[in-house]
Picture 1: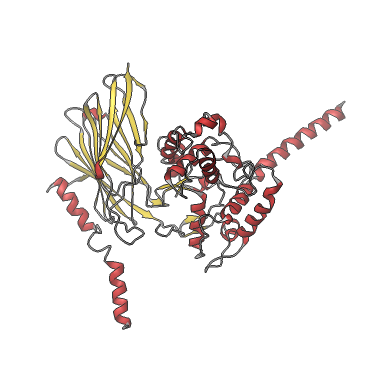
Picture 2 (picture 1 turned 45 degrees about the horizontal axis):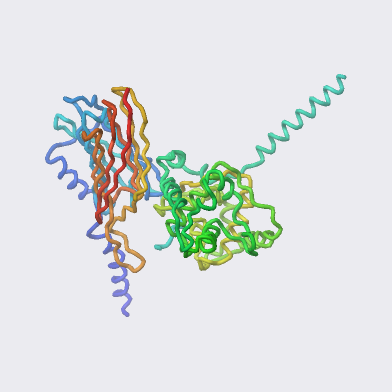
Length: 147
Length: 258
Length: 106
C-alpha cells in the first residue's frame, strides 16, 4: 500500500468523527444568535462559576447567578449556557420567573476539551446580560479503553 | 512525693507525645484528600453525590425477593444498617465452608446462588454494584479492619508480590506509581496512594459506579499490560493486600473520584 | 422505577427563598459516542426538567447532551404557601419520572 495514501486514510479516520458535529466558536455564536436574535448582550450582572481547572471533563460543576430583585416587574426570565468545543454548542436553557426568588441555577456539565463557556441571562425588560469563563480540562493519564 | 509527681508528670508527657506521634505517623492519604474542593463537596453531600443514587437502588434491591427461593436479602439479614455494619470493612474474606477469599461482590453472588437460588450477577452489573454500594455504605466512617485469618496470609503475600511486580509494555509496578511517586503529578493529575477507601466508587470518568476490579483493570490497561480475566484470583489477592495496607483508614463508600 | 434524590426543606417561613436540589439516575448518552461494536450509541438523554409548586410553574430546564450523566439540578423558589412541589423529568425513549416533595410554609 502506498504510504501516502495510507497516511491520508488514517488522517481521514481521525478527523471525520469530529468534523461535521464539532461545535466551534462560530457555532456558539450562531447558537447564541438563535436565542437572543440581533440583541447585543451586556457583560455584567451574570456570575458564571465553573472551576478554572478540572480533573475530569465528564462531570464539571457549574453555577450561574444573576443579580436581580426577582420581582414581577424586574426579574430574570431565562438563563442559557453555551460552549465552544463540545459536539453541540447548547448546554442548557433554564426558565425562571418572579417566583424563583433568586436567579441561581446549578448543574453539572460535560466538557470534551478545554474551552470557553458563556452564560447569557434574559431579563424581563428584554435585555440580555452575559459572562464567560475559560476552563482547562486536564486529561487523566490512564483513561479506560472504550468498554 | 515530689519525685513521684515528677515521674508521673514525665510519664504523662511521654504518653501524650507517644499518642501524638502515633497520630502524626499516619501520613497515608485517601484519594479524597487529593481532590479539589468541588469534588470533595460533591462526595460529602448525600443529595449531590451520584453514588447515593446507587445506594438508594441497593436499598430497594435489598428488600426484593429473587430466585427460586423467592427470598430477599432482608429475609435473611433483616435491616442492613444493623446487620451489614462493618462487613465491608473486613472484606475480602473466606466464606464459611470455603477455602478461597471472595470480595464483597463475590459474597453477594454467593448469597444469590446458594440462598436465593438465583443466577449470579455479571461483573460491573448495575444491580450488583448497587447492592455492594448499599452494603459498603453501612460501614461508612468505620475503619478498615481486615480479619485475622491465617488462611488469608498466603493470598495477601501473593497480592503484595503482584503489587511490586513490573508488568506491561511500560514495565511498571503498582508500587512504582503508588508508593514511590504518589503525590507527584502524572499528566496534571495527582498520583493517589491507591487506598481502596471508597469502593464501589462513582468515578467521573466512568459517569457511573464501578468496582475496585474495574479500577485495577484501568491501571493494567494504563501500563499496557494484559488485564487478567474478570474472574481471575489476582484481583482478590491484590484487594486483600490493598485493604491490609489501608488498615485503619476510614471507609467512604460511595466515594467520588475524578 | 427511577432513582431520584431530592434535597428540599420540609418547612419554610412564608416569603423564604428555598433551594431545591435534585439528582436522578440516567445515562445521558450523548449520541456521539461509538459503542464496543464501533457503531454510534443512539442518543438517550433527559430533554426537559420542570418544577411546579401547587401547580404553578417555578422552574424549567431544557437539557442537551452536554449535561453530565445522572443529572443534577439546583434552583430556588419563593415559599408562598404550604404545598407540593412536583419535579418531572422527560426525555428520549419515552423516559418520564416524577418526584413529589411536600413543604410546609408557616
